[in-house]
Length: 64
Image (cartoon, rainbow, N blue to C red; front, side, top):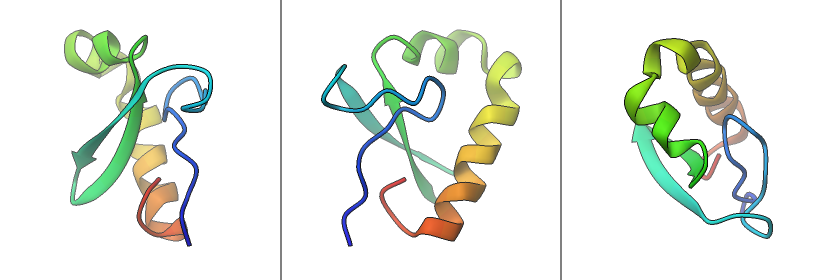
């Protein structure tokens, strides 16, 4: 089953904003173009959100 690409941080979909797929701890995480600078420059501020998204992905399967 294919999952909808949604940014792990702001929850916007690929229909709303460009989204790219990144790998984190062996799983897929989607990030939008607006949240990408946070992922790169302010990881310490969003690490909890990223970890929760990764754990959610383990429950839902690939593509989250």
